[in-house]
Amino acid sequence: MTAPRRFSCDPQEVAGTRALVTGGIQGVGEETVRRFAAGGATVATTARSPLPTGQTPDLFVRANVATSEGVERVVSEVQERPWAVRCRQYQRKVRRPEKPEVTN
Image 1 (spheres, one colour):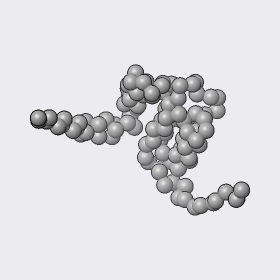
Image 2 (spheres, one colour):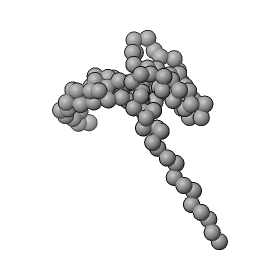
Image 3 (cartoon, rainbow, N blue to C red):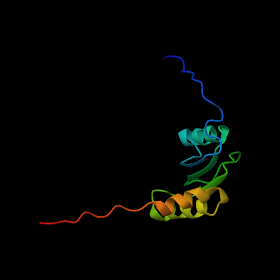
Image 4 (cartoon, rainbow, N blue to C red):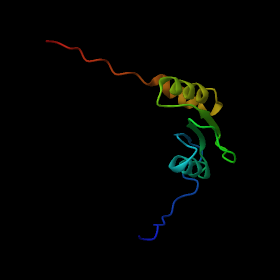
């Protein structure tokens, strides 16, 4: 096995941004939350399990995002936060593509 690669990055590269990390309380998800937070981002995370002691994301929503009910719960919780205003504004501008007309 080779030694882990080290690479440099700007410690404030995501300062002022917002991140939503699903499955963010263990493993890769937990490390992703920590990295975004260390970089200055506002971080929301979700998981099916309760938030472990010692983890402090800006927002935690206990929900199963594999279900439509879980996704709706996360969206509702995120939109209640003042820092989510841009997300709501962007969401209003998104339009679903028109369904193609089927002709025979």
